[in-house]
Structure formats: structure tokens, C-alpha cells
Length: 624
Image: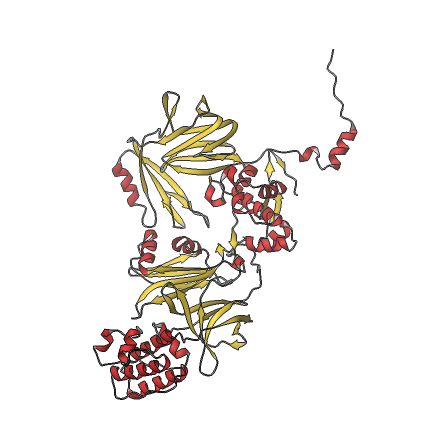
């Protein structure tokens, strides 16, 4: 008797259509991705029930196993490490590095160490070479009571999830031999991979998270080599969050295309206010927020901050720090000081030299703050304004006298720093309604107040300032991390020794003598930075700047720090933003999402690209 065919009533299709669950929208297979989880000498893998596959052999296990990389002596190989050149030619083959990527290139097998070294000598400078001495079977694992060796193993879950060093992951593992030991590759579907990237995006509104998932999906599918887990913030099951997974599901299969092609596209945590297109045709420059800022510059008049503060207050002007102090100068400076601190009586300088100046200063201070010590010089010693060495020579310079006066102001706690609010309108800076014209600049560090040549100020922030004798603003002090949270204002200081050590790790610069910004993008980001070394000059591009100097972004200014003798002792960077500053700005996307914009509108602000569905199993996924 023939089997009867089951008839589906037409009403069933009507319900599917009305509910949005047409046969075409049923779940489809995911495009696979390979993610590099680990690189090293040993890897511990476990799971509830899993298979270790070696060729046609399958080992069914539930207890953890450890894979070991091993060293042999059958042949030598070269791993070209991190290549910083734009083009590299080896044995007639040319390797072209794409913008924004670092390649680990594998090149050749050699029967002797001498032959491998001969190849190294042809590579030239700028390439990190690792000699790899190994056998043809470089991974060992004990399965049951026997040891097995192979160049690669596959690990497949039969139930539950696989774990690497205690962290759970979806999909399966490929464990293979490389020049740097063994690699553990996580192979899984793209959508599952994206859900494992959610841990770093806890506070993104849904529409901003949707925009991010398109960027991550596009980048993951555009790369032709294993993805690095840290580049995407991928942490497996522990990184999955319900809110981010919702964004992944809502944009399933959608990517950004330019000219019908997938391309790796940049994004940034915070653009600092304005994104940059980096000269790429599919990126837009976009201002995420309108908070005005200004960069103030000044040449510090002195390396000693005290001398500059006295000049800003109008108490004195030091013409030559090492030049002699005349009696008329001493008389005028002490008169100005007495008037500034409202001393009830001015004590004139009787005679020339250091003792005469200090005696008059001591009497003035004793009148202001009477003490038990009757001798003016002893009073200055007790107040730590001078020390015994100051009394051994009678000569006094202009710099000496100014230092004694500044120490006296500090002792009296009489340096009148005011607090005011900054306004930046069309590039003009005012503080508490007063115009700011060529002020002396200061900055605070661990040692205290130091002179500065660059200061970044924001509209609406509070700042410390000094007034000159006519009431004008004569000095400003950057004393905190200004700017709103989304701008991510940052500071970083390098001593010359630490800067030398860092840069010489990448290229032979020797002693670092200076850093100079050679070119900026229209948004203000540094495009090229010149490193002046004792041996030669190097020009760094924006990617190298962030990597070699470990800076959060390339929107920055460089200030130089000197000791009191005028010797360069460090470099100070102050900037805004975090990341490349190009493409989707997550701080800007967050703001737009909170203002009601959807993910399509958000992405259109940053990219000139189409939103399309990727092809899966020969069919095109329908757009959402």
C-alpha cells in the first residue's frame, strides 16, 4: 500500500507569512571563521565529550589532554616575524603588506644552519627573523597510554563545549605546528564568533551595538588569514552577553560593501570629536560632537617655574639668570615683593651682595610672620627659604634672588592661583570673561608645577590662572584631565631613557634627540612624526606612531621637559581619543543611538558603503 502524502493546509502558510517566519527566513548555515586563540609551547584542552582526530583515527575522550610543541634537528626554517616594511621581496616573490596589518611570513626550509643564515643575510634591516629548528612532526600528545606525533590535530566536541586552559568556546579546534610553537585555532560560525566578542561592549545602546556588529562581521569576513582573538575582543562563552547577542541576531548576515566587495574597515573607541577618512574613498570625515577646544602654545621664559610665576605676577623680570644682581634691581624687586605680600614696612637693601639682599628679605618676612629667632638669616634658614650653602658665597645672581623670592612666596602660601571657567568661541579663548593673550603656561606633574609650551583647553572646563599687575590673565596651569568622558583626554610622559629603550626595540635610532610633527590630517591627527636620533632621522606613519610609542591615538601634541639647567630630560604627550580615529566612532554612535538614530543612519555618517547580506550556501541573506 503506497504511503500517503501529508497535505499541509494553506492556512499554515498564511500563519507563517503573518508571523514573519516564511520558509526563506528559516535559520541558514553560518559562514565559518578561523580565530587564533593561542600560540606557544603547550595547550590544555578539555570538554564534556570530545574527539581528537589524527588523520583517519578518532580518539573519544572526556578528560583533559595537553598538546606539546617539540623541537627537532631535521631542518631549519625562517619565520619573518613582524615586518614593518611596506614591500618585501624574497627569492623573487613579493609580499605586499596591506594598510593596517602585520604579517608573520613563513619562508623556506633549509637542510643546514649555514644555508638558513645565508638567507637571513639577504633580508636587510627592518625584518625580525626567527630561526626555527625542528622536526617534520612538531606536536606531541598522549592519548590513552600512547604518545602520538603530527603536524596538526583536530578536536571536535560531541557534546557541550570545548575548553582551552579552562575557558569555554563554541565550535572546534585545529591545533597545528608553526615556527613559534603550536597554534590553537577556533573554527566556528561567524555569528557565534561575534556573540563571543560582547564582553567589551557592555554599555552600548542597541542601535550602536548593531552598527558595531556590522563592522566586526565585515572585518572578520574580509580577512583572508586567521583572526586574532585579541583584535576583536573575542573571549568565547564568557564574552557572550544577552544585549550584544541581541544586536548580532538583529543584523544576522549583514555586512558593509564598497564597490560590491568586502574590505577591512577601521573603527575607533573615541575619535576625540571628529573622525578622519585617512584618504580612503569609503570613509567619511564626521564631527561626532561640537565641544570646542583650543591649543595654546608658548615658549617658557625660564626652566625654573618659580621665575616664570614671579614674572607672570609682575614682581620682577629676570633678564639674565646667571647675570649679577645690581643694588638697584635688588631694591626694586624687594619693594615689589613687599607691596605684593602687603608687608607693613619695606626694608631697603643696605649694601651689595647676597647677605645684604637676604637680610632685607628676612626682616620683611619677620614683620609679616614674627618668629622667636631674632636674626633675619636664621629666620630664613628655619623657614627653609635658604640653606647653609647659600651663605658661603657673597655673590648673588638674578636667578638666585628670584629663587629666594619665590621660596618666600611659597612659605607664605601667597601664590594667588585663581579658578575660572574656559570659553572657546571661534578659536578665541577667554577665562571668566577675560581674554587670554600669550599667557605663560604651566603644567602639574609628580614633581609639582613645571613650565609648559603646549596646553589643551576645552570649552566649559575649569582651569587655574594668575593675574598680572593690571588684572590681565598672565598665566594658565593645566592641572587635571580636562574634557568630557567621551573625548578620552589622555597624557603620557617618557623620560629620554625610556623613550630610547622603546624606539630602539623597533629600529636603531640610538639616543633620541627630538620628536617633530611633520604633517597632520585635516582633523588634526598626526600623519607623520619625525624621530631625530644620534645616528639618523626616521619618519613614522600614524600606525607606527601608535604602536612604537604606545599612544592611545594620533591626535596629540608634544611638549618638551627640561631640568633647571636647560637640559632636555623627557617628552610629554597630551591628546584626545582612543584608536585610529577613522570609521565608526563608538562614543559618537552611542550618543546618536541615545538620540534615537538607527544603526543604518549611524553607519552612513562614517562610511560610504552599502549594507548588504552575505551569501550563505549559495543564497543571499535578506536585508533587515
